[in-house]
Amino acid sequence: MNTPRSKPITFLALGDSYTIGTAVLPTERWPVLLANALKKTDPTNKSYTTQQDIVAVNGWTTRDLINGINARADLREEYDLVSLLIGVNNQFDGLPLTEYRTEFEELINRAVAFVGGDRAKVFVVSIPDYAFTGFGGGKPEISEGVCQFNEACREITERNNIPFLNITPISAQAAEDPELVATDNLHPSGKQYQRWVNEVLETRVRTILAQ
Image (cartoon, rainbow, N blue to C red):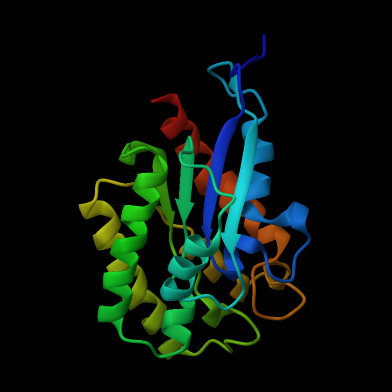
């Protein structure tokens, strides 16, 4: 029997182009695909519905996201679940890794505040590797740069006792499957975002919600 929660889960997704879904339909954004997956009953007989808020814009850096959160007067004081995916534009713009670390730590603290201090309700998604797109052209320096930012992201996330969900290996599969890249030749396609959900996000987020 289906046993959904008595009220919807409130979900805040913080990020950049990868969260707002640049070059894909709104229905193909990974937060939307994740919400749809959570509606399905899992083997433990639980299903969830979500009410989503997304704070994300194509091209945003960590500083832009901080400013974007500050500018949103419509956000709830507290959510059941908060995600954070940010950093690729810091890397692309050549901004210092030290700056990213400081601002990412601030964003972690903001995310935790949005769940009333319960770190178990926050999760961080790794930065995709855009070297494996037509725009990236397989350049190893792109992969090396993204790797450096992901290492900083992972270290800060895990030090704060927050789950780090690594989708970067899926983005690398675009080298063999062009359908994993959107029509702009740079961002993930809906097919890739669905793989994020199916292979990494849904199971881990269900565990978070069950706690």
